[in-house]
Length: 156
Image (cartoon, rainbow, N blue to C red):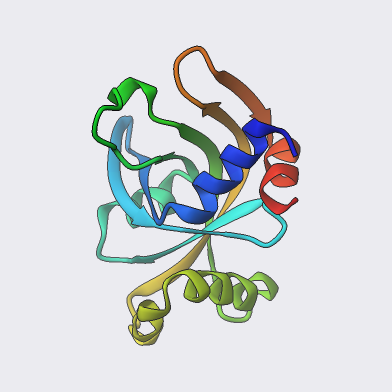
C-alpha cells in the first residue's frame, strides 16, 4: 500500500467526524456528522435526524461532500494538516434495504454509544456513495482519486 493510500485509510477509519456539505436550494450548507466507512470502501454511512437541516438537504439534493481532516497539533500549520474531500451521492436506507444491516453494523462498531439512537423514529441511516475524492497529505501533496482507487485504498 502506498503512503498516500495508508494516509487515506487512516483518515477515514480513525477520524470520527466529517464536515458535511449539502445544498440548501442553491446555497451551500456545512454541518458536522459522525460517519463510518463500508467494508468495501465504496460508501460511507451517516445516522441523521430528520429534524436536522442537512438531512432535509440530502433528501432534496443527494449531491454531498464530506471533509475529513486530521486533528490539529501544536506546531503544525493548519494548511499542512492531512485531509480528504469526498464527493458523493446520498440516499436514505430503509431497514428492509440489503445494505442497511451492514451499514448499521459498521456505524455501531465505530460508535457503540449511538445504539439507542437507532430506536428513535426520526433518525435515518444514510448511505453516501463515494464518487471521487481529493486527498491532501500536506503542502504540495495533493492527488485526485477515483471512486475505485478510494475503495481499494480504504478496504485494502
